[in-house]
Image (cartoon, rainbow, N blue to C red; front, side, top):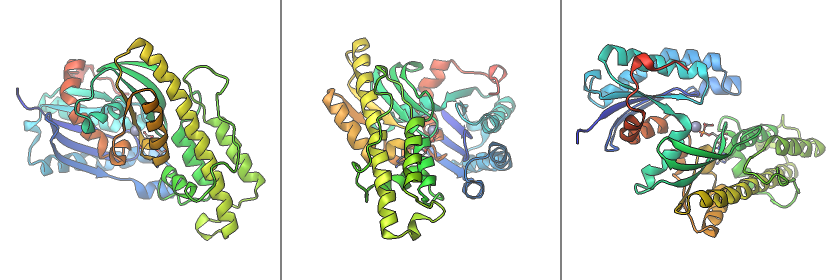
Length: 353
Ligand code: KG4
Ligand code: ZN
């Protein structure tokens, strides 16, 4: 079987990334250009700025990836690129670059779905992960419960009706005056370790809904009100707050986290029940996306999986977030099957998102 050599390009958010991967999973090179300084300057991703930053570095990032892999465009079998979901202005930069290369070197383009890539990264750590399996994807923009029946064949059992859990972590980090140079989730998780998770009784969202959907907007509001009623000055970073003030913030962080995760547990348990009715042979629960790097999330979902007789598969934190490094890598690892599944998407038929 001929080895394929695939260039992966990822520009769905704020990092410009490219990697060259062999179809046997070997990573030949990986290059990421980060926009961390822009992030700190604007307190988040500003799509127009991010698009310009991508445009400025994309050629260089791709060239570097090829150089590091010691190959030229002529050696490539295909170009893979994230086609969404993501910021469309940013996605476009990657797709344009992929199309250009594909046009010049007559290469097939493989358009990769961002969330499919997140779900399939589990196969890097669990080589024998067989379909069907359950997947919970939790990130800054997504909260999805999916029954993965086969490549490209996913049944969505639940999604968020408003915000995703990662978005809630990020906002609460901001309101609690945490260091935003890191992303919000890890900062809240760290502070929560000092707090009492039962000190504030936030209401678990969507209790009355007998479905598998999520909602984090209401919980966000509950937390905001709790912060306001305790006269916390978020203008003062937690690192310079008094001991008493710091303890209050830690209690809020811990109480929020307890309920946020409880919401995941409840819906996930129900989704497993539903999925088992459709596919009794399911053996694994895959949890991925940025929030899956959270230790409390992992521990609680492990219990849920065990209770249902499933094994939890949770990639290491470095493979859970986009961070630019990971997506091109997953693109490569899944590429052989994805190429066959999508039957080689040629440049002329690839629509720009
Ligand atoms: O998958 P990801 O890197 O990007 C997308 O949103 O697609 O996920 C990023 C999200 C952010 O909201 C971040 O705060 C959250 O994942 N996150 C965490 C943790 N690490 C990252 N949330 C809670 N606990 C963590 N340890
Ligand atoms: Zn992502």
